[in-house]
Length: 189
Image 1: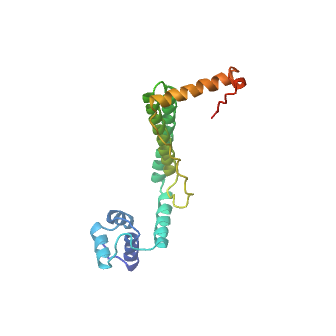
Image 2: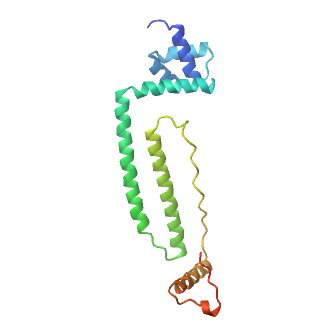
Image 3: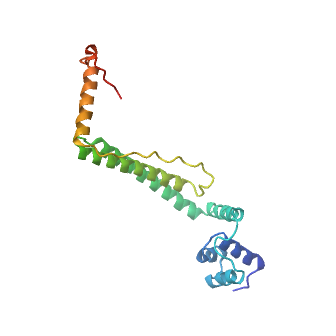
């Protein structure tokens, strides 16, 4: 193989300091793994040692290279379509499961909330997967708001009884059977 030019050596050092691994550098430059390692040792190039601007430039170069490769574009399109179909299928199944939830006891309520939490996590993960598949670089995107924390509280039998009493009182009031004329105040939530 021919000797590395100073420009090639500089590119190898820049890629290494931008965080690229030896095998990726070798593949991108068309040089052997041993040559890449030798250049990095000679110039004391360590992985991730350079500033953000140079890293951003290397990423832009890689994106430009990737975006022009038809085989990569075809693979990315197939993955994106496959991911979208999986997301749609998962949402359908989760909707079916959510519709079948029955809450008749504290244990059922606990399991229902666990299922709903899993449902929310699945939706978030599939949305993240779609965003990831649709974009190569997410460093410029807006910071997403975190999901609110859903507190989970195990209800006692007394809590369930009090909740049922409150629901009965609210139902009676809505049907016009309430005890407003008796001076009792029922608080609707």
